[in-house]
Image 1 (tube, rainbow, N blue to C red):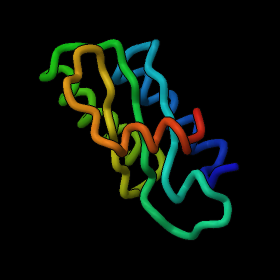
Image 2 (image 1 turned 90 degrees about the vertical axis):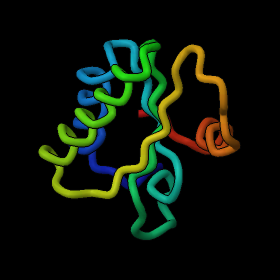
Image 3 (image 1 turned 180 degrees about the horizontal axis):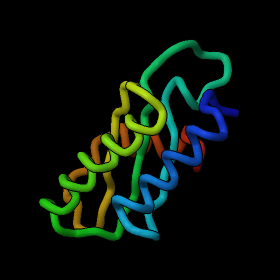
Image 4 (image 1 turned 60 degrees about the vertical axis):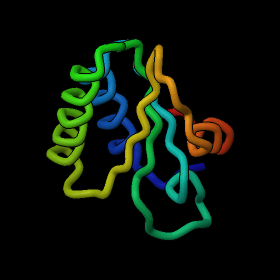
Length: 102
């Protein structure tokens, strides 16, 4: 129940582990998690155990580059959840509730 190929799923999972650590968890949400929808960005929620904001930002950039190089240019929107994150906008709850774990 998602519109990503097995290869794309593998690349995303691997990049999340490489960039955010072996315990990183990835959830696909939004239109790509819906087989009936068309087009759309790749919307991902990544949960990591990292806590240093600068490291998280560097990891986000590295993740984007690694995925783009492997699967081509795609619009990828990332939500990053980490211990100590103060604010959780409503989109986090929507991603958790409606998303598909990769």
